[in-house]
Length: 210
Image 1 (tube, rainbow, N blue to C red):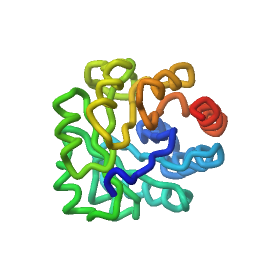
Image 2 (image 1 turned 120 degrees about the vertical axis):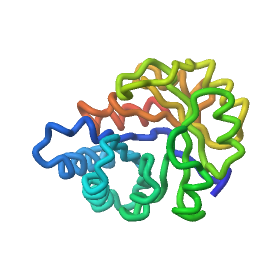
Image 3 (image 1 turned 45 degrees about the vertical axis):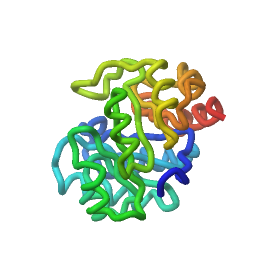
Image 4 (image 1 turned 90 degrees about the vertical axis):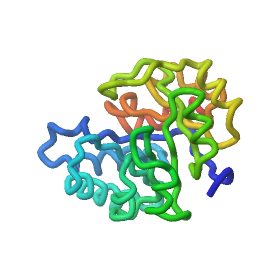
């Protein structure tokens, strides 16, 4: 897909860990996704760090059921991306390499790679990745062991270092999203600030991000 990929301004992430108290987490996640979509979200990443393959596949299939017409990205797992019929996969520095992901999912699906410093960004830029993520931009509470904060300057440096679409992630809210975009990001990834009122939050973000 290469440089032709156009990311939406809002890169919505559903973290399954935020639904562990639900009696039926798969249905709760699907309902949450419906609210995101109703608000205008056109791309959703599904993230589940539990390493419970059957649970992940069950939840991902529910997402696919309600997410017709929406780009769905599987975090970490290239195999589950295929099994659930998702549109792409996003990997971190400790996951399968971009080259390995391509061998699993082929060239038709979207591939994103997380980076946290200049060296990682350069390597990902030279890889098969369609888009790159840089972060955490601000302190974040959705990762157990977050990488060092890169700040807005990190986003600027990343923008100068790649022509690939760039997603900024980490602590991004309605209060700071515009300055992240101004620093050079094509898209902002949001987890927690979508949670309480997903439909209204998406509408707010889309209005703020233009």
